[in-house]
Image (cartoon, rainbow, N blue to C red):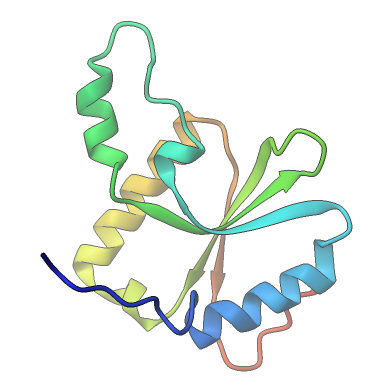
Length: 122
């Protein structure tokens, strides 16, 4: 049997700072969720396709933040916080794939380039 411990922090420092800004900027209008897996916000069971294979393609991918309406928790906007890791070639391929999945699912994606002095409310 393996051993496990809970993580001390759920998000990176950059993600937490951005989250706090999101709460100030839109917390009254939207529910904000962090580290959301793609299968939680897009439906792969599209008629005419092998949904198991489609799910396998998105299964281990996640979005940094998702804004949902507060009444029904309907996803309205996906947000990716891009730091230096998004400049790597393999990460760019992953980002392009996620963008295409969200485009097909008709869920808008906002990419935010992270910097220490980002104004989230802007």
